[in-house]
Amino acid sequence: MRVELDGRPLVLKLEHLQKTGSFKLRGALNAMLSGERPARVVTASGGNHGLGVAMAARLAELPADVYVPETVPAGKARRIEALGARLVRLGPSYADAARAAQQAAAESGARYVPAFDDPAVVAGQGTVALEIVEDAPEVDVIAVAAGGGGLAAGTVSAVAPDRRTVAVEPDGCCSVHRAIEEGRPVDAEVDSVAASGLGASRIGAVPFAVLSELGRAGALRCELVTDEQILAARDRLWEEFRIAVEPAAAAPFAAWQAGLVPGEHPAVVLCGANTDWSPA
Image 1 (cartoon, rainbow, N blue to C red):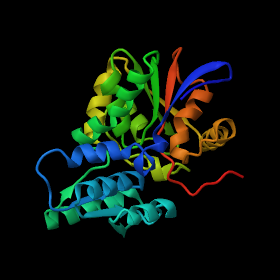
Image 2 (cartoon, rainbow, N blue to C red):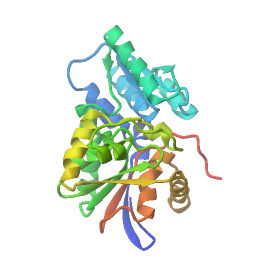
Image 3 (cartoon, rainbow, N blue to C red):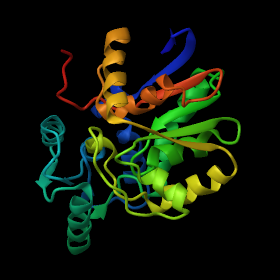
Image 4 (cartoon, one colour):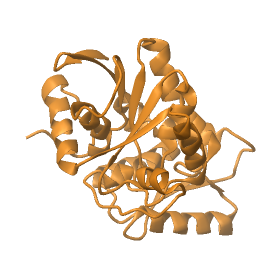
């Protein structure tokens, strides 16, 4: 969607209109179709990846277990169950759910589908960027929300060195920023209105390897935004375009509004809309 806002051109990639309401189906399906067909799949998610796995499992006619933290938004939980997956609520954070899911998969022999720390998942997410440059070749920089780093790694892999990627995180929930800053994956605080979508406490090893290497080559830029900026961006997307997204998806648009996304023809990925939010 090509728009002009504040006198500047902008391309919006409408991944909130993707099946399951986010880009996550891309990586989940790519991972599930890689290698031997499993008898069952297990994953952990803050919600959107769980929806992607649930839909991919349904398409592949496989049973799926989706572990989520107890704080999972009701709308995401409801949609996961509606797709036929078994929903397991466990622990206060994504990390707690992930540990339990990995243990369950190891004990049962099911295939664990990571939310971001997997080459096939990263490659699948990179198809978002491939579509952007195919349909809007003038785009010279792509801004994406970053949680565990899968979308950012897929994006920078797909478009570097010709185009830059801006990975945007909330300032209270920034595992990618911390890892790039420290030069290694480290634990990060998870405290943000966008935590259900960007609540990874540590970047995945696979995304970090990609982002650190291409970051050193100048293909990656990391930016932080506040919760207030995210909510203002979410509300402006509704006001200007009648686009309703979840807070995580508004983060890169918030960065663009704040002047943190360079380029003459930037694109912003609106990555998801699995929320019960409604405009005031």
